[in-house]
Length: 278
Ligand code: SF4
Image (tube, rainbow, N blue to C red; front, side, top):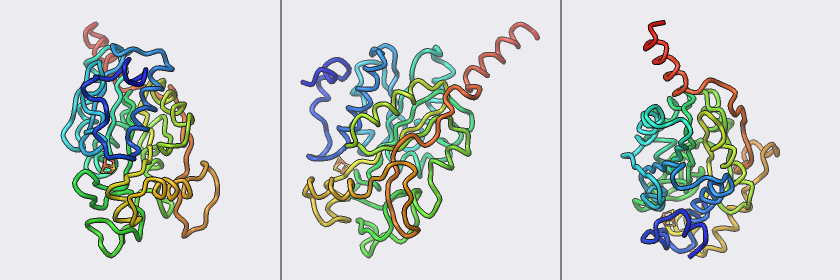
């Protein structure tokens, strides 16, 4: 077993439950690498999971404390835990794009608005892949899915100047980044910054779904072809693209780490003042 998996993950949860060639394991590994490089142990992190492929892959794999939310609700649970737990305890959540950017979006935005000290890793496979491959909120326009056999007609949260990370920034998030699962150590560095921020952080990681997105949208389940398609569309943050082009810009999107009051600290300060009768 991999050294990091042995150190941080429960052996009965290894190997991964994901399909062969899926990028989820790469995301999972990057999070564990970031935790390790920050010198954190299993007792320092509480790991929460959402629903879908991302939740299934990471659910209860952490050797320390875990919790799971129903679809889209893990952010609200994490918000309560943030107040209940000691401030130095890190809370990391892994959820899918349907969970974070659709069903749970209001909870997510409210966590950003409050600047709650949690790190959300959104593992994005471009739709509801665990239920057979229905389109979601980041499915590229024009591509076939199980529920859009003639091609996805809706805009998504990455195109036409409406970037979900902009919405999260405007809502109050203090650290935001986007990466792909296969792009090397950049993503690990962003996850480390996200965990280090005393406030709401989100790292959006796009990863290849071989079985459903590959099979329906790209008409291939050959991992090499699917990875090549994703690589071709990956661009560094700030690079200009044509109005009709679609690409994933990766890198740190916004960094105001430790720049705003954090929610649980504000609540603790208030309760202290009430106790003191001030
Ligand atoms: S359905 Fe797709 S995203 Fe889900 S585990 Fe399989 S390859 Fe990965």
